[in-house]
Length: 51
Image (cartoon, rainbow, N blue to C red; front, top):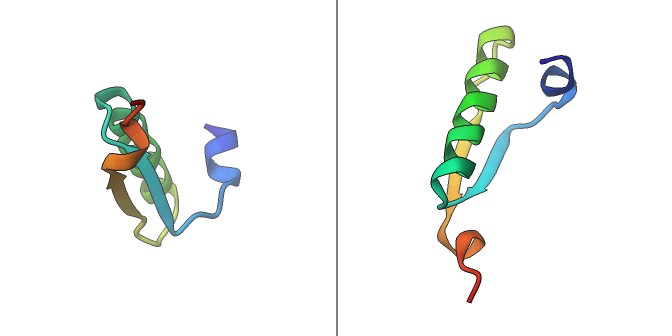
């Protein structure tokens, strides 16, 4: 958790893969619990495409 709280992000961008979204949501929840600002979560479909 200490490493997460060192990050000072306004936006989290993740792929459309389920596990990536779960991780991003968890990080967002942790950061908003211990900080006063809201963090925007963007799911980018292009990041999960490995074709």
